[in-house]
Length: 397
Ligand code: AMP
Image (cartoon, rainbow, N blue to C red; front, side):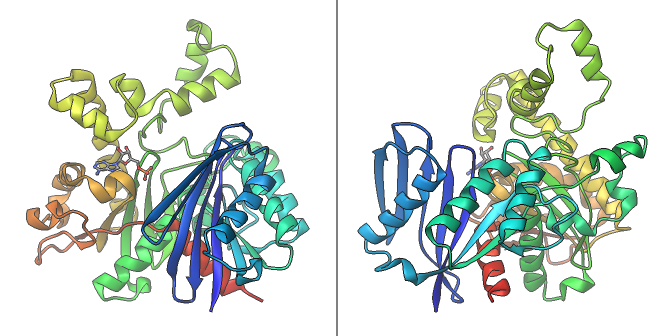
């Protein structure tokens, strides 16, 4: 019996979840926000209670110290020795990391080098890893990559039709993201469907603020909608998803908003998607509320969002030459029956049919298609932290 902590470090935040393993029981979880500021906030949830404190936190190392002190102060652990493993989520693993890995100096350096591929994320992830190494140097430390699951994609799927030189010299290719989520929901779906994952073809739809769709054959990712970065694929909360790349040089010439690479990245990543089109919010609940009030821009944003997801699912049904199941997960996919219904009504030709009463149950987990549907539809709440904790167990020395 041991305690393992799953860590998701952002540039100014650190999200954590403490597990009793191998029982997979969540003992406590929390979030440290506003790292680097004098009014950072540390929230700890345990035993049905929530503890919050506001304090100055200079960096990730101090955030880790505060997290461990909180665990002691609140009686969640009696000594640091109870924590025997830590797993860190890392966004970009490039071509190097085909699986999770035990942390050593070489691994940390590679994660830092890969910051080139995920500028907003990998640096913060590496800071979290270093902070734990400094404070708890002897525990099992594992890195779990968002991209590893997608390293099984065939080259025809991951290459872009650019001159090959940019793949050779600049590593420009599709890496995908949300890998732990797609892998986890596919495994859980196979259990519910009562078949080995190796015998199934699945399309997984992770629909949250970030959105990605994956085609999975025999448990392996064969294609995914996110690309070189998590900007590609379907429209998202604030991201464009796929657009004609010629729009960028055009706007560089014809719009004052587009001057630098930073402008382009900001507008495409943070000001577009549901937010950019609705001019209301990036949050689906707000967009739907405005739509119900008759707001035409929110209606358009919603319709575009559904349209892009339908097209990707359709593509992947074709890539797989038909599938056994479509799986919904993440904030919108898990919680929004209307989104699921508006997507699935496009796939009745392929054998998918929703059981309206099952689709409306909240919270829902499991099959939501009718008994006779040949293409099953499922909702599986994603659990990326659990995948991380399981990988720590798996790789323990
Ligand atoms: P995530 O990135 O997975 O946390 O998902 C965030 C998205 O999920 C936001 O667009 C939320 O509006 C949406 N969401 C969360 N809860 C609900 C809900 N109960 N109904 C509809 N959408 C929801």
